[in-house]
Image (cartoon, rainbow, N blue to C red; front, side, top):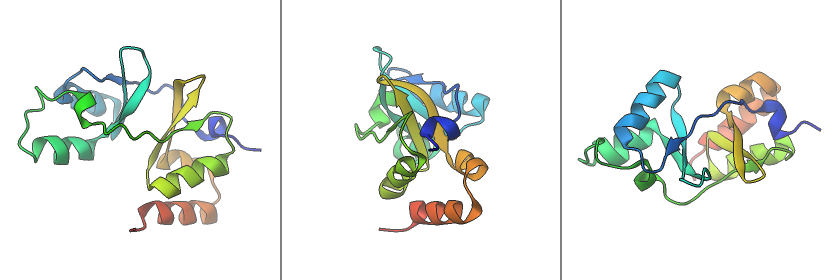
Length: 139
């Protein structure tokens, strides 16, 4: 059985829910990523913010990225998978929720992330095409 741990990438950095959006954007640039997990002061995952969230929900909405907190852009909805979950369960979570990045948890702590790049590196082409197609499908 292939698990989420087998295909995830390690070394995920969180941004604090109290940090400002401009700092998160700089972190994304430095890390060359399009999303960041948002963690609380208890070091627990609170949500994920994406570069798209920053543009649409902050900048385009007329808000100042130096004043808006990362926690303000998380909506409380959190989809994740346990590190020992079968990879098919992880894929199902991504398809059903139409998400491109899936946090991987162990003992209620973030240990990794599964992204489209991870899927491309680990899935057969046919399974990859089906999964990505369903993630991007319109409701």
